[in-house]
Every structure is written in structure tokens, then in C-alpha cells.
Length: 181
Image 1 (cartoon, rainbow, N blue to C red):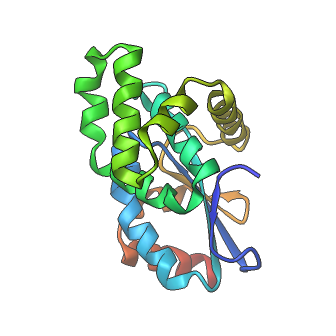
Image 2 (cartoon, one colour; image 1 turned 30 degrees about the horizontal axis):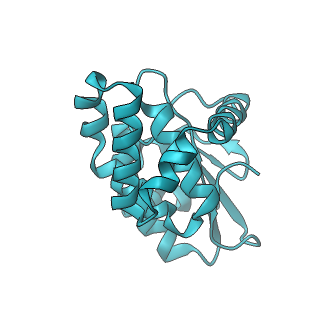
């Protein structure tokens, strides 16, 4: 299964969330969405899929670090995602002057800051093809579902373009009220 799952596997409703760590729209949507899910996890399962956009310069590399955390330290993924959403500018602005070695060093350092996972473990993971390949498969999965950008959402496997404007808890409450009632 692609993505990282939050909540009960037996919930009546599944929300597939397609985010890019470096997308400002994803960052804006995350706090309200996570709060809404936290208050409704008895019936709502949420699956976060990372969909790195090609026009966010280091999005794929940040996604690889995220995939490493998601796979090896899933309890730390929420911290990773939140931290990178709050520090996007570092990877959107200054990072363009970095070479690959500087990028991996900064990613490993920031991953340790965000999650507590040792610098050396993240650096080692970034230098393997495992997470590169895994993230490419995820990207193809999202594309096969018709996903073209972030943030985008599917409810029970159906693309829901109206949800892309949801930012606050109230937006999510209104959205789900309109489709469930």
C-alpha cells in the first residue's frame, strides 16, 4: 500500500491526501486537516501520499528523506512533515546553491532536528536507491489516480476537487458534511 496511514483500518471513510513537502498549499492545509482528522479519527482514516512536484527544486530529495522516515520510523513521520512544512523556504530558496553533498548533509541534519533520528542513518538512506525507487513508484501511483498537483484529495477512492480549497477545521467540517449527509 502506498502512503502512511493514520487512523482505523475499519473506518467508513478514507481520505487520501496528496502532499508535496515543499508546496505552500500543502503546508497551509496541513494544520487544519490534521486537527480535523484528530477530532474525527473514529470514522476517518487518512492516508498521506507524498507527490513531489518537479518545479519545487529539491522536492524529490526531501521526499526521499520523508520516505525513509515513513518506512523506518513511522511514528516520527508527522513530526517530519510538520517540520518541513514550517521550514520550506530553506529548501526553496537557499538550497538551490547547494551541491548534492551539501543537500544530503542539510537534509540529514534537519531530519534529525525534526524527528530525533540519527544524522548518520538519514545520510546513509539518502545515498541508497531504495527510497528513490519507492518514491518514484508513489509518484506513478498518484499520477495513475489522476493527481496532477498538491494538495489534492480523494475520498473513498474518488477524486474530490472541492477539498483542495479546505484549509481550516471548519472548511473540512463543511466539506465532509456536504458529502456525507
